[in-house]
Amino acid sequence: MEIQKFVLNETSYFGEGARKVLPEEIKKRGFKKVLVVTDKTLYEAGVSGKITDLLEANNIEYTVYHDVKPNPPVENVLEGLKVCKDFKADLIVAVGGGSSIDTAKGISIVMTNPDRSDIVSLNGISNTKNKGLPMIAIPTTAGTAAEVTINYVITDPEKEIKMVCVDEHDIPIMSIVDTELMATMPKSVASSTGMDALTHAIEGYITKSKNIMSQMYSMKAIQLIYDNLADAVNNTDQDAINKVGLGQYIAGMAFSNVGLGIVHSMAHQLGAVYDTPHGLANAILLPTVMEFNGEVVYEDFREILTNAFHIDATKFTKEEVIKTFCECIKNLSADVGITQTIKDVGAKREDFEMLAEKAMEDPCKPGNPRDVTKEDFIMLYEKAYKGY
Image 1 (tube, rainbow, N blue to C red):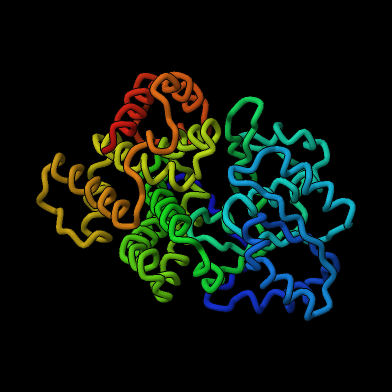
Image 2 (cartoon, rainbow, N blue to C red; image 1 turned 90 degrees about the vertical axis):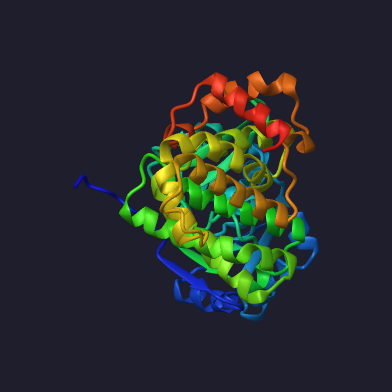
């Protein structure tokens, strides 16, 4: 057996109201000044206030950077970095979805690795020397699992690319998955981030680097998300929200260590060029790409159908496995209100070659179980444009 490595964060809390542990943990660890990183929507809606209220009540000094944008650009990291330095923070608390947590990771890394202050040099597999400034991640969406991964994504507007930064030094020292906060999500965000989590779990299960431990986590994540996402989104059922929140975290434990695939390679380009929300892009692309990948991983699909989708596929032909698997994904996506074509998020046929060229350079591409060419990417964008 070859040597395998698994990286996870030190401590995690789960459950309704889990945020209440934050002040005690901050004091116990000796932190004095906290930078809270969040986005304007959460700030104005008072969601991040549920965290800052705790800090105030416990006499913990803090300041807030709340200008994080969706698909956060380099500018967000630079602005947050200045706030962090000026305030002399010794801890970052990220409150929000992947955009807030990814921005906080970028700030964290550059605070202790000032030679990367251009931000763009963080792209790809990093060789930073120092662990980032300590960070606690409090997700408000059940999707990205940024709170447990060694990855973060920052948009380079100049090149119109999403930089996928992979760095063990960025992993939060603590995650607090408070599903009460997740219950505040608008339906559109709950559906797209939930499908993002399902994409993470499925791509993590079939990636070239998959192993026994990663597949164990991925399978459980798939089952939790598939069984509960519709209730979580459509009925705001708290038990279902709890299970989706746990499922997305478990999915992150796996894919952070074994990588993803070309659903993400393609979705990153839609986000960079059209500012498409990442989870929505993944959700639209997922059945189309899985049909393509099914030619080489249909046995993995068979396992997922049987163990997570509750369909006995043991005697299905390869074609039946692929068709049933992709239809299950499409039906769940439709059930939670996801559009089925990239045309609806602004994609243009004349851009497909450019998008394909960018996707060929995406760091998630090598993990895909089936090798892919530029022509394959163009074909897949065309299929996703027509709708699976």
